[in-house]
Amino acid sequence: MMRRRFSLSRVALAGAALTMVLGISLGPAGAQDATPAGGMSVEEIAAVTAGEEYKLLAVVKTLSNEYWQTMERGYNEAAAEKGVTIDVLSVPTEQDTEQQLNQLQTALAQDYDAIMVSPITPTNLIPALLAASEAGIPIINVDEKVDPAAAEEAGVALTTVIASDNRDAGARAAQYMIDTIPDGGQVAIIEGKAGNQSGLDRKEGFEEAILAAGTFEIVASQPADWDGQRALDVATNILQANPDIVGFYAANDTMALGVVEAVRAAGKLDQITIIGTDAIPAALTAVEAGDLEGTVAQFPAEEARIATSLAILALQGSPVDGFIPSPIELITSENVGEMLAPAEATPAA
Image 1 (cartoon, rainbow, N blue to C red):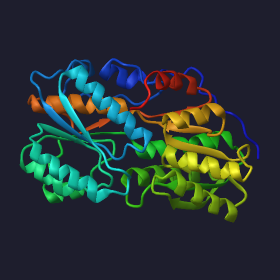
Image 2 (tube, rainbow, N blue to C red; image 1 turned 90 degrees about the horizontal axis):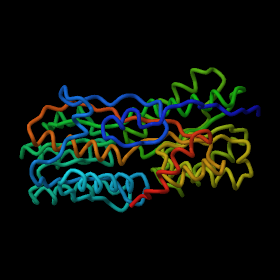
Image 3 (cartoon, helix red, strand yellow; image 1 turned 135 degrees about the vertical axis):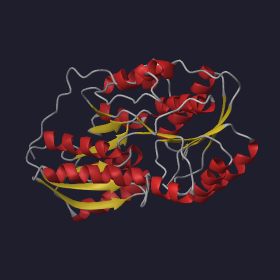
Image 4 (cartoon, one colour; image 1 turned 90 degrees about the vertical axis):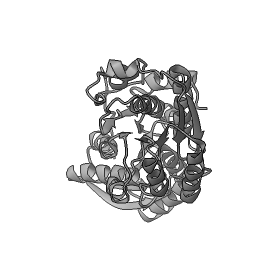
């Protein structure tokens, strides 16, 4: 298989988009700009502080995943920076949809001023969100999108959404394979949890871009439920059935690292390109070591800070836009050093 490195020379620091919002560096990027809220400039959003001691609730998925650990850290830092109280709820695994719903329903009795939610699935929190909406509690949807049609049908009023373009994340992974594997070949996708919108969007973005090249064939696309061990097992089976595979795309890094172990066991780490998503610290280390070819970075700590600012704005009566895009960037050996330094200086909680 003919392979070459794709140069990302002269890329700007990822901070460009969200540094403007929060005045902090995010790492390398050519990321899309964040949208101002309600006509406010991003500088004005950055300056938002609480005029009173708001009590906020953040619901993340599971702290067994470094991505959500990093988001929790972002919420904790935002609370200190902005003078608010933020309680963070999580569940043991990304399969615990009912437990996440029950947690939120119970928490709503504790008089939170606003809630910031990252549902496990697009619909699992709808009943609790309806109760919050009916109580007039601002709802900031963070990272994992609530299904807008289901929310509208149920009568849920989301205040705003801050999330990455997950189709673009998948497309960027595909483009890297197109650029670095000029001969094309067979590739496979390790999906997230069935029915999960972010995973579906990443899969579809990858599929559309890789097939458009005309030189690649998708020989397998299977879910591994965001789990590393499941991904190892799924990838092992795919490799046994398709020994000529040249690339794997995994919808998150936990699964990508499982794929790395499957490919390592097959003795093909130097033959197969593996791309993950999220840029968790373990994945960045794997990129630096050359085990993982790349990962599409998202910035969960910064999403948490923006979500906190948006919650404060909503409580202060300021209008906010319905969608705030969060930047993403492909991280490879060319630019991983720019991400590793801050990741090591501020490890996930």
